Length: 155
Image 1 (cartoon, rainbow, N blue to C red):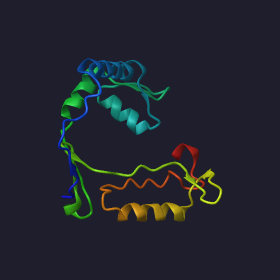
Image 2 (tube, helix red, strand yellow):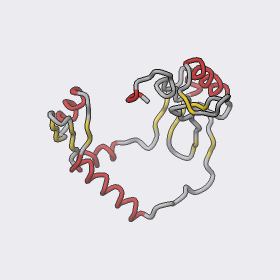
Image 3 (spheres, rainbow, N blue to C red):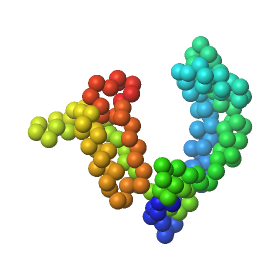
């Protein structure tokens, strides 16, 4: 397994338990009252088959509180991200920290310093550099971000 960095200190406690619970309750309320819009008939069908309230005309899914709580209880405390070579698998969870990249939506023209969409070659070069970095454990190479000519919803 690819070795990340082991956290040897207590995690930061930015929020109190009461604030965390308030955020959780608010999230449950939004999921149940407002819901989420899914623009996929298949997703709407799956949600409906699993106990959600689906408005097919509005393409909106409302999630019952009990269903969300059950899903949270079923979540594992860690999971494996498989690599092509098993020795590079990552175990996400616990006290190990891994570093990954995050794609931007634009680059900067080095001649004019103006923001612009990257070219396909610039994007490929970006992936090559990230792949060579010894402390980057996971590449997130979504080609939609930054490609010149990509549709706006994909950016």
